[in-house]
Length: 199
Length: 400
Image 1: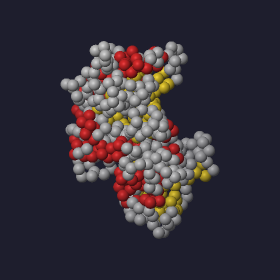
Image 2: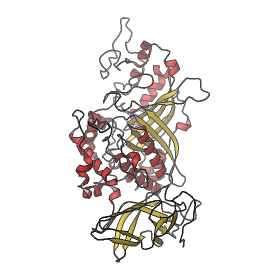
Image 3: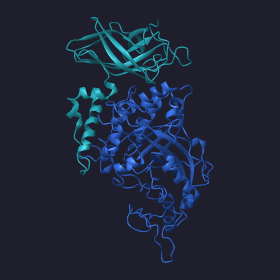
Image 4: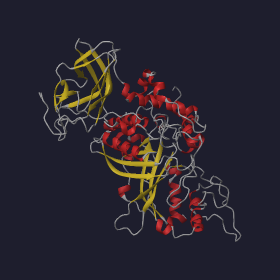
């Protein structure tokens, strides 16, 4: 869904250039025409595509870390979430069992939401070959915990995904954004609740 | 692209690329078949200049003035501009910006443009040595009744599209994405004709019924001459934005008969042609006299007073005004609460715009029915690009 929009932009812009002064005419149907092409060119031109450096294993699309203030601030916390869509671009299943970031020392956990309660996801996340897995508020997500400093909106963080067979896949420049959803103190049913397995 | 941004602008290629958009039907594009008229209406975000200046006027305006939160320093400004640029790039392309759970809300951007302006205080914080000489409050004018509630802000976003809901959601996202850095100081909402109601390229009207926006740059050369700053290097592709909020007294204006209304401006009401004849774009004949030997066009008409004098041809600028029409204040006497969000773009307001304002303040028949109630000035950073040497995010060169 996300990619199609960007590809449409590129095609429409060039379509306009060609058809500038002709009478109202059908715009080319861009979605199917470009869907098959140019993930490479798109990846040059959009920040969303700042994904993996490792070839052919995992990509994180629309990776977003929820901004937070420092733990000693009135609105501060010592934890936050990471969201996005994981793509397994290899031809084998991949099991993500952990991750690290360029933020440094913290407790990095993979979490799920079960019956409105957040908890560590035993076994991590397994993505079938060619499949995707969404990390989202109210669903599976990554947690950065025991981390006191501010993580300000507009910064970027490098993330390293760790697979069950010990591979490390780097995802650079994951963006930090202020987000209203994704506060780990709110359960999927909207009620305020605690996080399981706080350290 | 390998050509420098300055060369690109000087060569006229800038206006050519926006000229595609400004010249004829694009980007206000009609489609055939089952597609809705605005289905493919996207204005490219990146380029040597920001969109929303030369872009043909869209129907809806949300002009949002922001105040920097306490403690926002140069690095925080850079972070804000990075996230704002990325999110604006996504939203205007119909892509879901990061952190949004509402992909449905911007799938049809409807010619959305998002344009940022930096107020004086941004330079004071981040780059005092680079502050343009003209970036300061407008000098006070005798007839002004400026209300601080419509005054200068640290940052401004001009959000325009042909879909008021798209506009509202774009404003919502840009506001929430910036919540750690700014608070909203004012919102000036405006409108002109809905997409598809007037012909492409037709000059819209204001609430006085006047054709409003006739005198404007149109060609690449005119934009290069009047609007786009070309030096120093960091500033190539930037411009200035002046915002004047102008209240209109419709009650007293409408007491005039049509001839009197036309004489106050110097133009016909029906087609905007000068009273000396021709069509909307015919230059007025300021020397023409009627059968009594009196000037056909009143020397103090709005058109006469706003024209650049023969010895100051540089007093020209891009006008991109929007109408406003608010609920009447509870205690006001007038029937309506309407006016103009009068936005102009020019290389140097001190040279091109202030002298015109001063001349109008001194004498303008229209002053009887209008009052300036708000004023703000901004630097509009150059356009951005993720390839080549341009700023990757708004104002990068002055925030680095």
